[in-house]
Length: 282
Image (cartoon, rainbow, N blue to C red; front, side, top):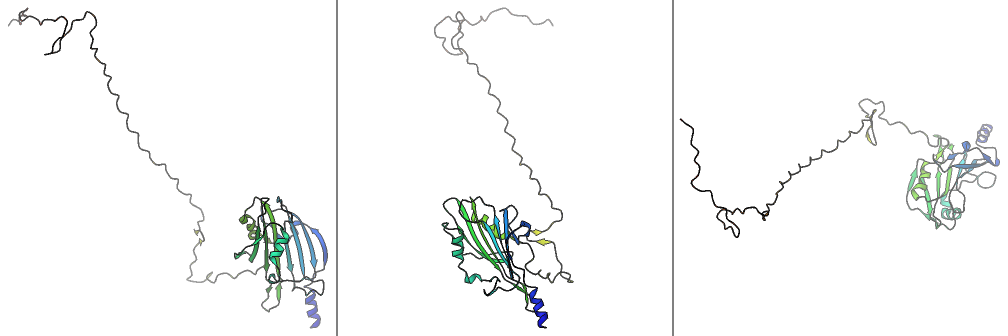
């Protein structure tokens, strides 16, 4: 039995290796698509853990390293008496001092907000130096998982992100922590909901956005509103030609009815006797 236990224990140990450059595809954690890009990956193996620094590209003016540091334990942390790496809880680490050491003279302020990503809760600090950069120092510890028997199934994982970027917002830098991805599964798959397959338990295709259509129906195109017809233009007013008040030279002056003629010659009315035109013969 002692030999069997010793053989099982030996499978949890890793062959130690000094720091070396490995391919980016061998990184234990990767930044989100679109960057920041990986420059190189420095890996070191301890008997009980693998430690990596994933160095990132940067356009920042602040002095310091842009990188993701990760330690993945395959067993419990060592006690410092051998080459095994210690698993130090964050409660025993001065994270504010770490943030100031990573980005000195940036005025790092620790966030008071509770946040979590797909792997659990994490913390962070933000700095804004006078050169226009925005800097973040974030940390996360993913607790070890146990088998049903109580034995260690997966060791703890610690992640630290330090990143400065020119003309970036806090939200943009914090989003990197939400989109970091480990290169292997961490949490055991959750059991399926008990309603699946059960009789008299209808399940409809309804998600967070409401009913999920197989073929989305395009939104109706709104017709432009009918515009009122313009009112017809008013008919042009007739042109009134003013009557000349002064007759041309030599023209007779015709008095207005019942009015005086004023000065000038008077045109007599036609005589009462005149030529009589006989009517037609009967």
